Picture 1 (cartoon, rainbow, N blue to C red):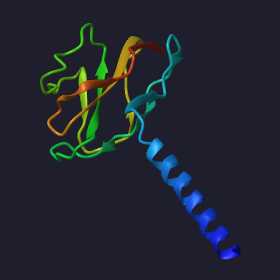
Picture 2 (picture 1 turned 180 degrees about the horizontal axis):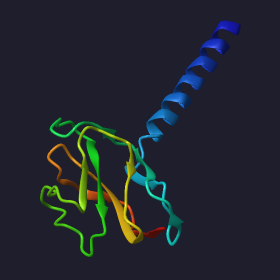
Picture 3 (picture 1 turned 180 degrees about the vertical axis):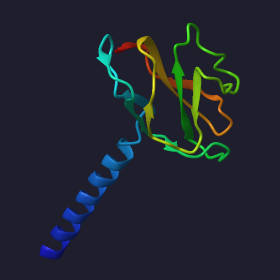
Picture 4 (picture 1 turned 120 degrees about the vertical axis):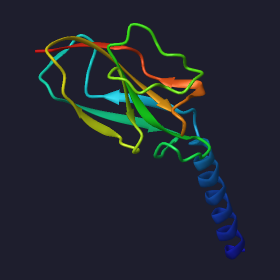
Length: 138
């Protein structure tokens, strides 16, 4: 009887932990850490890119639920999110799977967004993009 209770308890604990693990497979999200709305900073600024429930891989590696980061800097309008992102001074690619950077900026007002895109630099069907942050460099 004692062995049966131990086995039942083990099965119960295993089932709960398996269910909890499966429940952690949540909705993908990204976050840009290092600047806040309306704040003033000295250059360079240190930025960290956080992604949840997606894998960060180098550009060109085609794997489901993966991609790499792009910074949209001082853009008035978003690029076409159904096409590969161009490489410009306002769309900065992190195709080596970087998850942080030191960004040197001129004094003044700036805007920034983080966008996560697939192996071909194309945003995902449901784009993973942060809200636009306006900040200042002194």
